[in-house]
Image 1 (cartoon, rainbow, N blue to C red):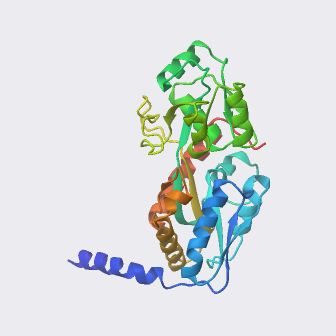
Image 2 (tube, rainbow, N blue to C red; image 1 turned 180 degrees about the vertical axis):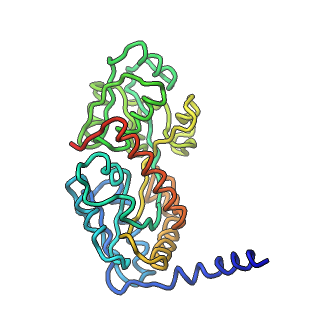
Image 3 (cartoon, helix red, strand yellow; image 1 turned 135 degrees about the horizontal axis):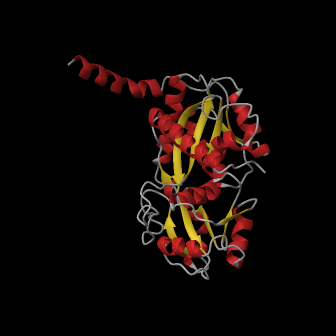
Length: 317
């Protein structure tokens, strides 16, 4: 009975806790990348939605350059008072493996406010590639080691590491990595047939799959996507446990008090569960996890991606 009362009291206290903090001045949301990408899009969507309820503007500030390290370091060194936040994604944690002498720990030096969403990637090939399923691709590559190449949008991103994960899951495939600076140039060469395959963001590749210029073999999420319900997952294709989705989270400096994290999390979740989220964030799987679940997800995904980056010896350009 005491345990049940304690649980009930904690449950009833949660809304009050989430409302117990309000910012005293504008909140700065740092995106450590250039404007225009999905990190920037989701940051601006969330910032616009929480500004009114918080009673202060939430200003998105792009601090690009240095593989995202300077922008993230700025937030890591900021006062833990809720007024400076970081929009983080997979490259933020993978930098722990890519960048020598990192000036901060991408996990230990931050509080996880809210894991916002994840974006499944699409495993595609050029139409000339002689495979229509993942199993057929593995057979073709095994018969022709080193003959085929895959494009990635960067060294150490989900496009690169997702394929490295797959190569290992398939028992060690010999596919040559061709890195690019962004998805656009990688896609240009893939469409031209200069490279044969890639794993990259689903929403970016969707138009090329739908008009027949690329062939989708699988999605990299744990479940099929509503965007391509006919396309199987990599897990369904014979590789249980395989998942390589991009994700997007909001972090705060280490030591930010729990009431601040709770209030910010509650407002972000409200926005992400709003009626226009699917329209504004196409291709995304909305998560809006609680602070505790966000922290667990962030630690788990960080360990996975840092581990694969170190295993393949990835290094920053």
